Image 1: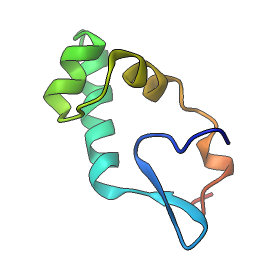
Image 2: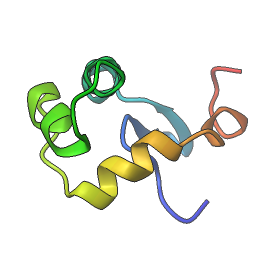
Image 3: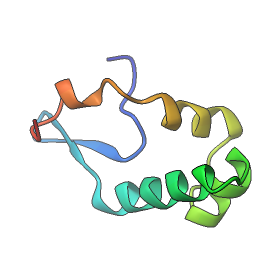
Image 4: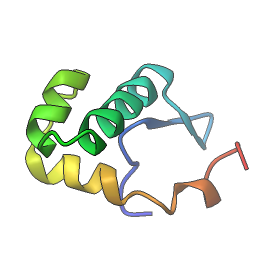
Amino acid sequence: MAYIPYGYKIQDGVVTVDEKAAGQVKVFFEKYISGLSLTVAGEQAGIEKTHSVMGRILKTDHISKYTAFK
């Protein structure tokens, strides 16, 4: 894995959910699918990242194979 997706962290050598960031990601998705732009949805969710990072958040579908939460 080239990077740890936003909403996850490494703890004891294992990729785990970062509960605070995961909550922000949930709000981000809800705002985005309601019609807001990436930037506005991210801002309203409290995610202070660039437009491209927020785009990567939307594309993160491979993380489940790396987590302890299968």
